[in-house]
Image (cartoon, rainbow, N blue to C red; front, side, top):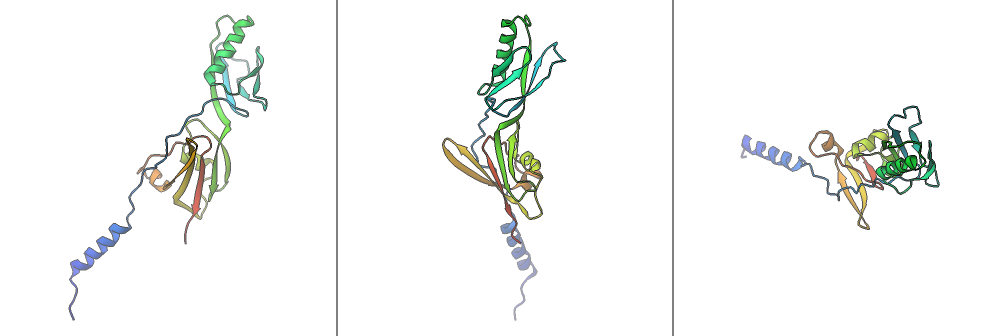
Length: 197
């Protein structure tokens, strides 16, 4: 009987290892469309320079308005943060409250814009989109993976130009810095699959 040479077994082991090693794949999704207009339920911070004692955090009411100091009720839904700042500045000057006010508006929470995190996380459900939110941040806000989550099979669904596109990503590759984290947009749906035992 012919004995197999040691290098044949080594070659075979290398071939099996090469087949089983997975190459990290970049996420093939259209870039996120940033929606920065203010909507119902959004929380923003409005600051007027020199008026430090005024309340600064406001939530947009169901009718799209907000009650602001000096200005009273103002319709803000559908406006960009900078447009709200300009509108408040104009109203303050119009009412002769301040002569040349400096007003800034920054978003704290986009409650009108949400992402869904479903499947094998601790707290599945809908989350408010935060400025600059990424896949890892969304999973973290959903309580992180549960014990049966498959971190290599996370599917992101996104609406782009009237169509729904999706990509499956390995969160392990993101954590290991093999691929970049995925920026999210309003309406994205994330599904974490179950591990196969």
